[in-house]
Image 1 (cartoon, rainbow, N blue to C red):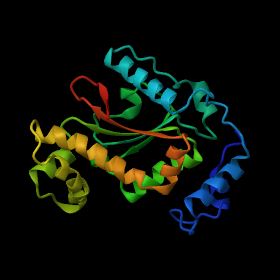
Image 2 (cartoon, rainbow, N blue to C red):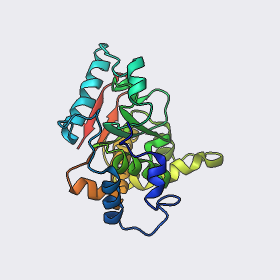
Image 3 (cartoon, rainbow, N blue to C red):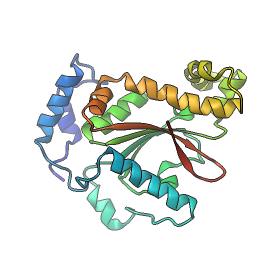
Image 4 (cartoon, one colour):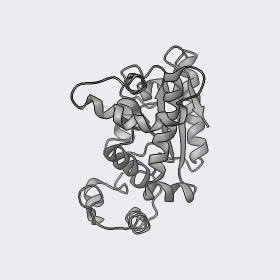
Length: 237
């Protein structure tokens, strides 16, 4: 496990705060590659490219839907394998809703998913930074933004509800997505759930670090919608 980039190695790259130095995305990626010293993480099969990672994720969801989970990577041995380093095959930006735990609905285990959860699955600066870390430094080849049926944050945005405290910030972050579905037929909330996923993906694609990974073929970004009634995840195009 000594070949993985540890926290102290990350700091050695000269990055302070949230990528505080004025590095270009190319410079940053170059330094990351130098730090990795061309080492391939031992737990990542060479065949696990972005498409293979998506297939693995969706096969896990199929097992969950059919009530035939395998509970992979949850043994004492797995704990030891990832105790000193991690290399998740998928990164998921999903809602913090208690009914949508990514590792369970995709039938995965410890160290498999870099799970970023926030109400409304919105791409805040902190969320984007977390995702950049997972993709660039940990080598995660797949990024999914997953919304879900009857999302409370999206519902509040659609109904223009007045919410107390910082809860209102989620509504503000979702409102721009509603413009695209304002006059569409069908369920207004469900239309907005899909539009919000697409909008948050657009925000993520503005990240230079993530866009370079996409252009190089190292990263695939997809949208997903989770059905609370069936447990099925549908890929959004």
